[in-house]
Length: 307
View 1 (cartoon, rainbow, N blue to C red):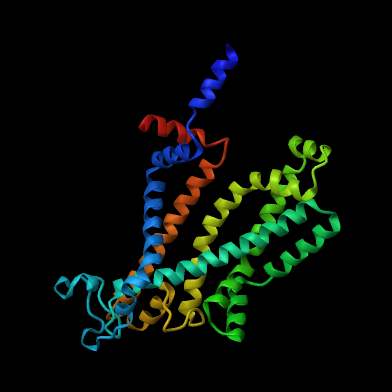
View 2: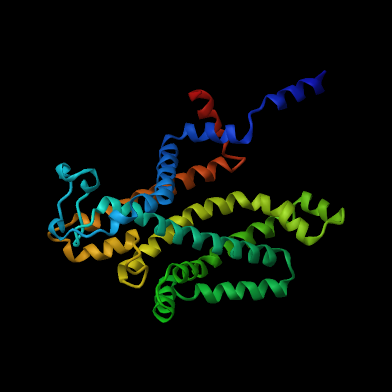
């Protein structure tokens, strides 16, 4: 009878996605951040094909046009740049390159850093020392300085920028993963898998990696914001993405010489960076709690009350 009741209770529990949706609904700041990021993602996908031609069409009669002049049309509500191109459209088109660089850099650094961290935490002391010394070498140089030197030598392109930013972020994932593996490998379920004859690869990717993944997911969300800011800084310095390609950071750089008489040229792309970064930080904070079995009960209780 007890077994039947237990089975009924387990079957009545909501699925993982339902529980995550309830916890997201319980945190209204994280919910707004998620909605904003979904809108940004949709804009990045459809924006260039929809408004790409309008973003490059010059109109010198409307150069540095002020914002909120609705009689000119809805695409001009943010104003125009020094060549008369609508800022609203250019921000939409620039979203794709900005997110592409950040997503590519985070994906490469996460995959490489996590793999090296798993190996360092589970292998012999000699391999561990070699990998950690490699991480120390990368971390001994300021990340932006490495990016400046490499991009100056190799030239500025989306691929080069993606690779440079990913290399500078590898030690973050490597050290985090290694620290988690050193603690997890001593747990009973790992010891049991080893006694049962499981290979090291199976233990790493089947038993240890799923436990480390929530921490890495939260870290990647934060790192996405950092990489996006780094790309903007490099573009602002003039060694990031070059015209005719555009990013939010490049738009800020192009508008800095007009700050005294046309502040909106740098203000709007800067606001896009601030809102996206803030949304990523809010969502990362929510994910840190939602993916932690010890703390997620707070969000689950809020979700039940609101439901």
